[in-house]
Image (cartoon, rainbow, N blue to C red; front, side, top):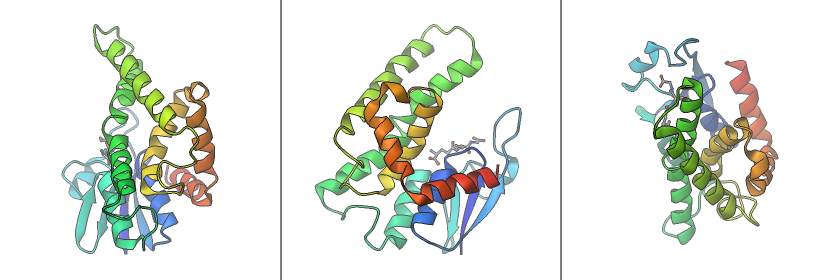
Length: 205
Ligand SMILES: N[C@@H](CCC(=O)N[C@@H](CS)C(=O)NCC(=O)O)C(=O)O
């Protein structure tokens, strides 16, 4: 059975959502963040040297990185659902969103969170994070105009990956400035399993 190493308040919720959508048998192994440092406990390093979550174990494989896990699970168990056909233009688009979530999109949003948490005046970082985050959010917003989902008008792994980015934007109180992202958030929330993932995340928090 698939094992998901899940850290509370983390990107791992994406993988719970995907496992639920795929209707797979899986087990959650839960870990709690340190209350002061917000870091994962050392036990997670016994699963994978980075000691971060999510990590899955399946068929003797240990897979880290939520994008790689999403790709693996959909390729292995999707039966043609949740990703466009490989070799098509839509598949390239899908891959771009899958990677965008954990590269260009997340960095400035996290930097903004860290700058705010630190509270200190910075020479460069704050301005950089603000400008880059604004660029990322308006790009994402513009690409959603007139669309229900990112690719092929159906839920894919790209949407599941980007749901965490939407959550960060929402928690930062920015959703009201980006109407297409706000509508997209409602669309994601129309999926029953989105809420199952929320409930499981709360259960293990
Ligand atoms: N790019 C990785 C990021 C993994 C990551 O940073 N996970 C965070 C939780 S959202 C974590 O484990 N933080 C605790 C720590 O770094 O100790 C992914 O997408 O899976």
